[in-house]
Amino acid sequence: MENLFIEPTEFSPKVILDVKNKRFELSGVSRPEDVVAFYESITLKAEDYVSQMLKNEDVLKELTFELTFDLIYINSASSKYILQILDIFKKLSLKGSVVNCNWYYEDVDDQILEDGEDLSEVIRMDFNFIDRK
Amino acid sequence: MKESKILIEYEGFFSHFIVNELTTVFKKVLVVMIEMLENNYNYIESIKFDLPEDIKSPYFKIVQTSKGIEIESSNPLKYEHLDDLKSRINEINKCNRQEIKEFYLKTLVAGMNTSKKSAGVGLIRIAKVAQNKIKSSFDHSDNNFLYYTLQIIVNYKKDT
Image (cartoon, rainbow over all chains, first blue to last red; front, side, top):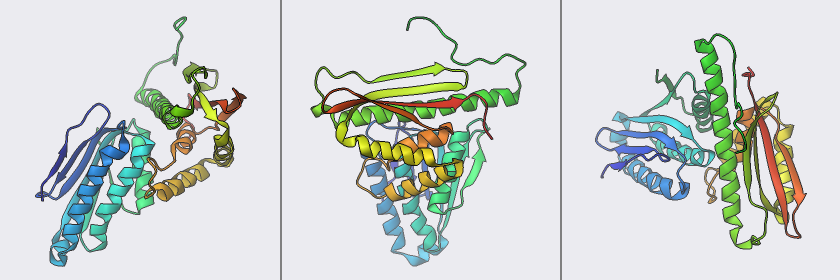
C-alpha cells in the first residue's frame, strides 16, 4: 500500500499517512474551500489502510499506530471529517493495537485545545495533549 | 471604511497573562468571524439560483462596543427556512455553558456520518466559542425573502 502525502496550503492542512512508519499526521490550517472533496480521499485511504490491517490479527496485536494532529485552526465543517478519521483509526485499538493520539496546541490557544478535548470526548479516545511551546 | 477606529485596546503594564488574554479574545473573534462568514456564503451558495437580482447584498462587520467585540453578519434568507433557523437559535440560546457544549458534541456525533457537507454545528460553535447569546433579526425583504442578521459579542475579559 502506498503512502499518502498532501502538501499544505494556506487553507488546507498537510496530510501524511506513512504506512511503513505506521503514522498519520494532519497539520496546519483546516478550512478547505471544498471540505468534502478535500477529506474524501483521506478518509478513503485511511479506511483502506485500516481494512487491510484488520485482516491480520497477529499484526494487529503487535501494531502501535501514531496519530498526530498539529493544527492551528479547524473550522466546524472540518471537525466532522477529523472525527471520521479518528473513528476509522479507532477500529485498530478496538482490535488490540495501540493507537496513540498526539494533539498539539499552544498555551495561548484555548480553541485548539478545546477542539481536541471535544473530539477526544466524542470519540471516547484518550489524547496526549502536547503544548507546542 | 470612513475612519480608523480602535478595535481593541488595553492600557497598563503588559505581562504574559495580559498577552494571553488579548490573544484569546482575538482567537475567539477569528473563530466566530470565520464560522459566520462560512455560514453566510455557504447558505447563499445553496440558494443562489433563487436570488432575485435586486436583493440586498450580504453584509459583515466587527465593531467595538463597551461590552466587547461585536461580530455581525447579514444575508438574505428564504422564508421557508425561517422557522428552522429561529428554532435552532432559540434552542442554542436556552443553553448554559455546559449545555451548549453537550449540544455541540451531540450534534457533531449525529452529523458525523450524514451525507451533508458539514455536521451542522456552525451556529452552536459560534455561541460556544463566544460564550454569549446569539442575537438575530429577520426583516421583510420581499414575498420570498427576509434579511437575516446574526450578532454576537466576544467579551474582552475572559469569563472563567
